[in-house]
Amino acid sequence: MSMPTKRENPPDILTEILDDLDAATLRSVRTYVERRLDDVGCSMVERICSETEGAVVDIEYYGPYTLVWKYPPDGDDGETKPLSLYRVTREWQVDGTESLHWSYLGEASEQPNGGRGNHDTTASGHATTHPRYEGETNGDDGER
Figure 1 (tube, rainbow, N blue to C red):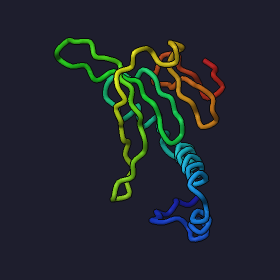
Figure 2: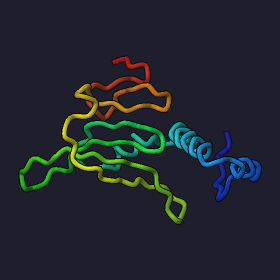
Figure 3: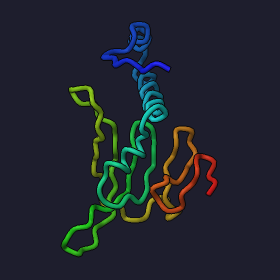
Figure 4: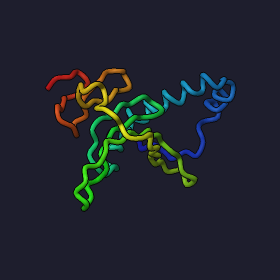
């Protein structure tokens, strides 16, 4: 298998097709591309878990964005920190690199998913527990 080459722009045939699409169809293409990127590289959930500080309680993956419930990192003040909700998206930098953009949505008033536990939704739509959390599963089939 050969190594992929770095491309600044997609092939001309692809840009011609994309240029003819309306906004709604382009959004669905973007969602597909986000999911495809997760398939071939580090998934959004893996990146969130590896790059965040504090305790991640739950992650819900929706394609173009991901909701994350987490506690902030432990401080030295001994105070209990509130559970916070964030919307996380991929953000492309001028130099072509990708980073995660965290938007604080506020304090979470209750445990996500009605207290059903920690999970993320895969591109196939199946809810699974991410290995970083309690209740670890071995893949999308839900086996423990």
